[in-house]
Image (cartoon, one colour):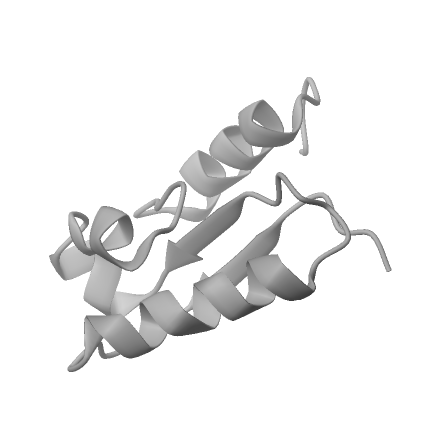
Length: 80
């Protein structure tokens, strides 16, 4: 199946390498070889820099911000 993007929500990240592995495995299994990954949740609100550490393409602290970033990542004008 083809997906334009994947979004994950994580509340705690005691071991960032495990989240990074999950993201890597998702990308390897995807038919979309340029699959963007957005990650969010309490852990990423407190430490947005974790998104880059785990290999995600973006993070957002609010739903509206996430929608705008997703639209930009997949090349669509708006997801409202």
